[in-house]
Length: 414
Image 1: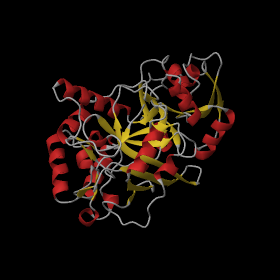
Image 2 (image 1 turned 135 degrees about the vertical axis):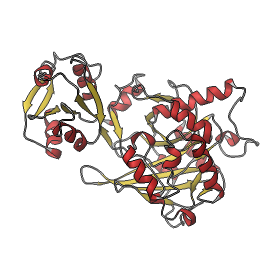
Image 3 (image 1 turned 180 degrees about the horizontal axis):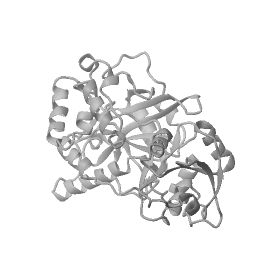
């Protein structure tokens, strides 16, 4: 069963860096080059310099060490788990919170205690592997889901009366307006309570499949080189896991309850380009979907999709609601991502990209950069749980969990 261990994390030193807002960044795989340049300009301490070093891995390691020496990064006084809360406005307009716990998740092969919830697209893992080799650190957490309840109660209240910095609450607001708060949770009794909950059932990897696989690859590499287990020096204490809380036997992880109350799951849409000139895409997709023209846009289109039980197809000439036909292309799952991927597989050679922002997908169609965009409905929390616990995986690019925990709120070094 999963093991989540405390560790002495590195957090921004507010007296040196100033506002934490300017030193955090999104997870590496959603940062565009334009965003990276903007983040670099915000602060000499912005963690994007380490998270995305553009191949300069030794420089990333040097920065990480230098920031500790200058106290731009401050180590926690003692091993801790970390409460983490994201407060945001949902697309529906209601205020929501996602609350979880960050710790060092002991690595194990996927399939028993750790369950991937969807397949991944091919992606070079060499970049993340080189970064771990150089920095000996996890800069951003993977995101896991637990089917157990009571995690918030086990963590206790947010210590709002404590100051920022080591031992207290660190808060930052990202560019989307989400408030991120992190604080250390110490004491053997609390650690044991959280560890018991987290270890009671398998964890689903919601976000960070590639980072988890990279952590496993690095662990195997170190053990093959004769490193043995990646435990820190010293004797285990009273904390769960003791000295094993550090090292390459674990990966930085945020664990959140698998519940509608805690999660905001968004869809990932498909953008199609490069089709032959004059190709009748509407006609081709008409064999898998019942297409009905609609003039709806924005939130109204999403509402119509939900009411009718349909996807949406947008091309230059117009927009259609696409209700799946029973006789359509064989989809492996009762999911929009599976239905459209099966249908697109029958098209002539084309380019396919993925986009969670509807506005970006529409812009690509309107500017002629893309032939079409297909909007999907999001998978539900119950679909995610049912698929993973059944030992199966959803198609790639099915779920987009939002908002994303920010890199730089806490770093775990080995």
